[in-house]
Image 1 (spheres, rainbow, N blue to C red):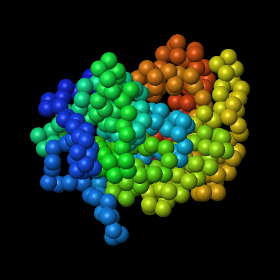
Image 2 (image 1 turned 135 degrees about the vertical axis):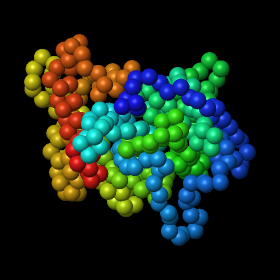
Image 3 (image 1 turned 60 degrees about the vertical axis):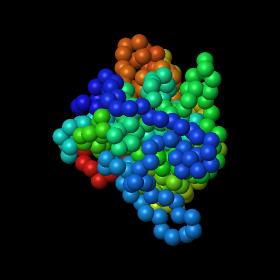
Length: 343
């Protein structure tokens, strides 16, 4: 499949003009500095009234990966889940699905680092003013991190900070949702599935997504600690309140398997409370993933763990690495089936 080639797509069109203007009107109406377009995205109503949900252009299905709490490995799982899905060949398609990743964490985007794109050039624009995704490892991606200016002359993009109020955040999210052209090179077929990496919490961003976009499911990520489970309950309650179906939940860092043995060490507590919560709330458990060193290394190096498998890594991670890959592949199958698709 063309989108799974390791070659970066050469941007054929003009660069994205990030204005980040200080004028009151532009900052609130067009925070990403995109050209004005007649077919604007749906707007949050100022006073009551129904909100019109719609599909993201050129995207068939949308899965949000979320958690009420930060630091549970949500972004890592979102990236690896996207690759696990993209590398499968489903009979209903007769090919591998076209999968993309959208990072909606405005204030702390981590997708560029995890995809090895933190030093990439600015995204380009189509003739109609849509943003073209940046592709690496064969998957198209979009993140606020690609649009950040350097904070100083010698600084990196990741050093820049977004200091925006709620209205600008909502508008930036709308532009990332509706002003990205997910077709390869701005033409051809779109995506079969878009994985959306959500920020932690239950604030403006998930509310904007749930109210404006037809979301086909949400995967909730947790760790075994009680403080994480409490936030996960709130996240599930929020998605249900805005009528987003819960695909299932994943327990990350469930246990650690020593590379020299096969004993499971529950470093962060027993998974019993997690399983009880899922059962009480009627949420399927998609998988329980062990704590694996290589997963963290892959995220920092920009090469997701789902793409790597060599003898050195197998020796380093031991049985835990094989269990992690198998459990994630199982979760990917269940996510695909939840969309009404067959294997």
